[in-house]
Length: 78
Image (cartoon, rainbow, N blue to C red):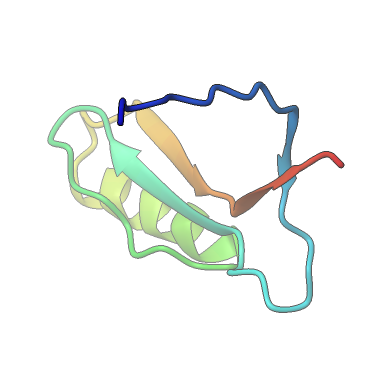
């Protein structure tokens, strides 16, 4: 008896997950100077408030990165 391989090409779809049970999209901000990061929040106002407080304590820290965590899902087309 010999081994046999089967290769099948399938089409997959990828999109943001908006299902009711999907994880929430969260936002955070990271200081580009010292890499300190705000807590993640579903409300962007929280990370924005953190940036303003952080730059108030560190006036030379003027550049930041936005970190968005967005759930995605895939499925195989029939």
